[in-house]
Length: 297
Image 1: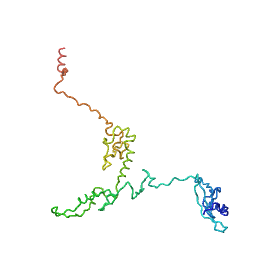
Image 2 (image 1 turned 120 degrees about the vertical axis):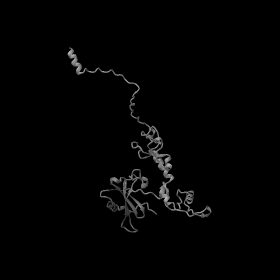
Image 3 (image 1 turned 90 degrees about the horizontal axis):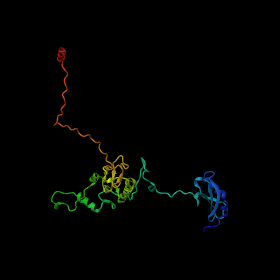
Image 4 (image 1 turned 30 degrees about the vertical axis):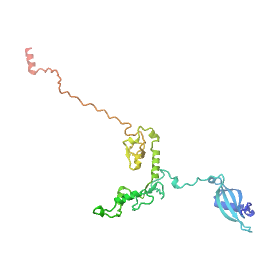
């Protein structure tokens, strides 16, 4: 049973406890003796103030003890413990929860957990899909029927249980040979994230003259996400190269402000049915006429 009264010899070993605290701490970082607490029969803990500015409110705890009927006090342990008004670091958060978009740099590796809810098993090359794969029994039966080895002859000559062929080559051609693919949860979280940054509720979309669904710069994407998202291909737009909601919009809409073409001058009109009459200019007198005029004169 723990004794409430500290052992006298252990309680008097203040200098032994201080020396142990000063040995563990930096010089001058052990303050005044605060209290002594009985931890058991002939076991007490001395508390000293910590004068380190980085550990305000912390205390050095030095535990001493002595054996039964012994007069020599020995040292048990020395630790630094927080007090009631100590500054404590925030609760530790795993790196996977601290990571934010944009934190990765060149050369960084971001491992994914084996049970990441955003992913599910994809096509791995095995003939039998994993139990939690998105490939259903119906899909497996369809693959069986399509990849069955067909023998020559009438249908009655076909084997009753055709051996299943390999569709690995076809899977590689279609880009399906991936260990894991996006799960439904992963698709929904990606859609929510994209809709927050480039969706209909953004200030840019609210002031846009028209949505992206009617924009000529929209690059369609395939899959189920293509029903609600596309990629902006306007180099002058605020979302160039980003996945945007079809309800998103900006001032760079292809049909928002079409620049009028420069006016072209009208072609000249030539009227070939009328001929303009111009008065004949009197010709200058010849040299002979000039001589005759001089002779008569």
